[in-house]
Amino acid sequence: MPEGHTIHRLAADLDERFGGRAVRADSPQGKFADGAALVDGQTLAVAEAHGKHLLLGFGPTTGQGTADPDAEPGAWMHVHLGLYGKVALGDGPLPPPVGQIRLRLWRPPAAPDPDDGGKPYAELRGPNTCALVTPEERLAIRDRLGPDPLRPDADPERAWRRISASRTPIAALLMDQRVLAGVGNVYRAEVLFRHGVDPRLPGRDLDRATWLALWADLGALMTEGVRTGRIDTVRPEHTPEAMGRPPRVDDHGGEVYVYRRSGQPCLVCGTQVRAATLAARNLFWCPRCQPG
Image 1 (cartoon, rainbow, N blue to C red):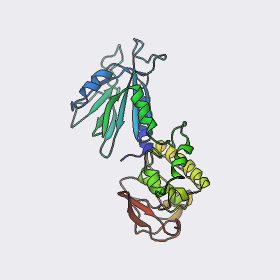
Image 2 (cartoon, rainbow, N blue to C red):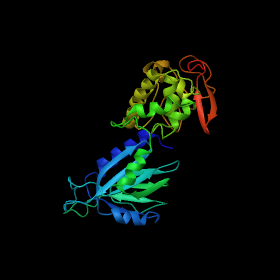
Image 3 (cartoon, helix red, strand yellow):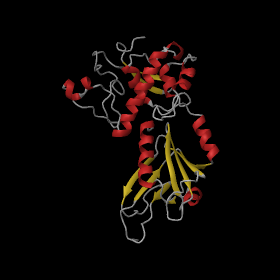
């Protein structure tokens, strides 16, 4: 499942391509035909991410195909990619639909050049959720999620109040989207390693200074993930170039300390990285760098 940095990057890409402009929409698959018809021709007023949730706000245009700056979005589209959802972005003439496309968005050619073939489009396939919601429902979605380290309005104290009162292991709490929004399996394993925290430590036994350090580090790591489109968590002294080791080869990309490195030597101390299952998810840690 994509982690929060991927959704924030997607929101920025959609805003750059369609923001403030009237868009066309359809649902070649047919499962979102009614919703696509309702936003077809409206303006994409805002594209935002909260954790792993993408929220697109649509509103009326000024009549020239641009957004009305005084109008609040009247309809919101809620997208959650889940395990299998993907968004493909392209430029040029809109291609014929291939496969099961839940939603297409594209910008119509700009008058007076109806043959303009350079307009962007986006194709959504296989999402867990793709639905139109009211402004009130959009707020309800955000309210049920924990603070997102990538959002400037996030309050780490909200998460701390739940963590500091819980007997649940900190590794499970970091993955609970009601506690903290946007963090997935890679970031939780890596940030705990970077701060020497045993992933099995109960939340209530974590000290507040360490929590604030974890929060700040998540914000920095995920911001870099938005910029690069991949997850890199190793410090400069542990990169392949600095250590003279081969680059990591993995379908998730990026250089990491413990994620999917079970049985391999820790990049810091050489101890064998361990793996276990916690709350039905794989957990990775170094028993020496993250002592119990």
